[in-house]
Length: 209
Ligand SMILES: NC(=O)c1ccc[n+]([C@@H]2O[C@H](COP(=O)([O-])OP(=O)(O)OC[C@H]3O[C@@H](n4cnc5c(N)ncnc54)[C@H](OP(=O)(O)O)[C@@H]3O)[C@@H](O)[C@H]2O)c1
Image (cartoon, rainbow, N blue to C red; front, side, top):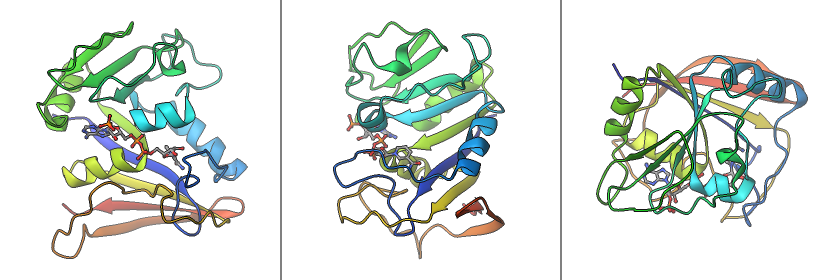
């Protein structure tokens, strides 16, 4: 069985994930930050796209975690753009790099999965992750990565924190970026929960694929 996929992100009140130059903007309230830190501990793996690695250089670990207790970090990087000194490749947790079959870039990491010719074959990747014993994955962004999971019908839960700020900019990333697509009238979802977390709100949806 493929792993459970939970997509989580934080957007501004005008629907942006970051600035239009892709710089990180503080969107989450303190309460949401605490929620995300606690939530990370419950997942076997945390996944981001290479765009987030390059823009934010995240650790994707939790403060008191170590190599054995942190979730596995997964980076979708079809063309091998993740620099060797990216923090996501440090010693604080195992890292799985996912790239295309014909990408010959090597990284010093736990595992490299090469899946797909023109684009990453997410079904094949999830099958391989299930073979490693990964039962659930937290997808943290960015917009193009989240869109690829929605497009493939591979989102089991979508939670989005809406912060009380406006970022603006038609080029600023949004939670579902990349080439647009219309599937009837979008992917319908059921709203499962709505919670005020400090000066913002957390919405949790279950997509209906
Ligand atoms: N507010 C939040 O919660 C939050 C969370 C995370 C990130 N962010 C922000 O989001 C921005 C980054 O978003 P982004 O959309 O530019 O980058 P991204 O989604 O992190 O990475 C996109 C890149 O990853 C690769 N990729 C992702 N999914 C793929 C798939 N299924 N198949 C093949 N390749 C795939 C592609 O690489 P190639 O380009 O090499 O083909 C793609 O261009 C940053 O500004 C960051 O600060 C915000």
